[in-house]
Image (cartoon, rainbow over all chains, first blue to last red; front, side, top):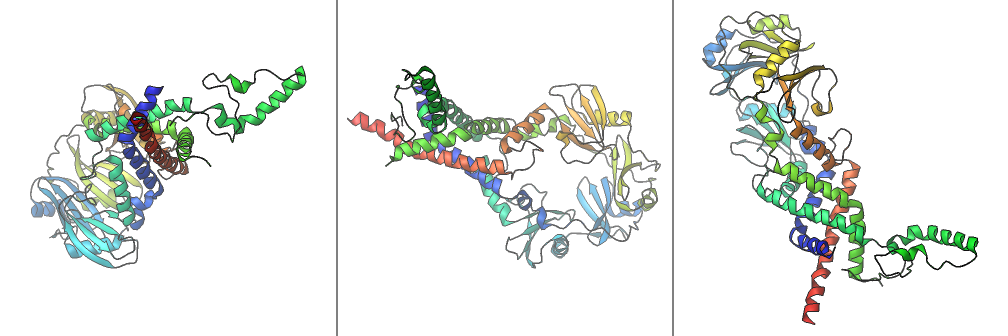
Length: 275
Length: 234
């Protein structure tokens, strides 16, 4: 038991800080409302178009896009019907009625974002994000980042390829993401949690927790729970006394073989210092 | 007056009494979640990554005709399933699958069609063990739309593909490593109902108690090593 106590102490010294960080970051993530973290609350549901599509022929699409179409979608994009053609080279957008190709430029991205934004604030900036950032690491890039002037610093992300709104990020998410970084111990791109460092530390901390659990069985004395058991015991003793008419020589309190048989009240100081 | 080391030890001990078992579950679960790669958990290896062929558009049903096939058209997608061009359509009445050459409605897929679809997607060797048509989402399907064909295969960890009878799409795939991960996740976030709510009160309470528990452990460390040094010096 002394060995376990020593190991618990040393594991605590080396890895205790990470355990504290796991508990703290976990507690923060548990407090942050996951609806706000996901950014869904900042988005309006997709509006449906009142008029049905009047799509041009497949032949016209083929003429504009060329061969190599793997997938062809007919879908509403904000205020009009579009064809979205996935080819071996990437994605092309066409007006569904005229087959005229178009691109999601900054101005279009801006209006697509405003159409889905649930708040009332105005647009602060529109910028193209090509490289992976904390905010865009899970999105297909390049994406347009449309930032709004609200208190939560909401940004909507519009795919340059498809015009779809891929998500929203807010300050709630940014705070959550710091906790997430600490939790998964990935201080670079904050993405993967399958790396040798965290597996190693988790194994060590698992032992820290397990040894702590084992130590609990040795750490509590009868005196620790005397405030609960005390009244029951004195009742039992009184009954024994009343039955036999004599004071019992051994009280149940003293039968704890792990510790010196000293009777202690709830307010007594600890009998041994085992720090 | 109570001495500080005694106070540190006592608070650490009492906090630990409440959170120790959960801390063991958190850390052991953490090892599982970090040691087994998330792509394996997701079952990426169960599904063939075959490049999709280019569509031959000539002679296919025109998109303008789709509104007649599926009134209240919301969106449509032309793609290849089982070497056949198909339209996956979403309309007022729900989702549906049409043969893009003939306009014939293929959905809802029967058992044979769903199995053929699953077999074409399955990347491993085993045959079909069972095929069930589900109208009520099992726990491992979470919030995904129903109905669905559940096709289980022979192989390690009971690989299972879920095929939508309405669209022919692979809805998701599951195997026992995912199911284990889900149990670990449930224990990790302490939501024993639908395993989704990361903001439940139990978790919030336990995490903050654990913050205090580990902080008092750190406090206790201040006294744990000084004593030994003093003894040596003596």
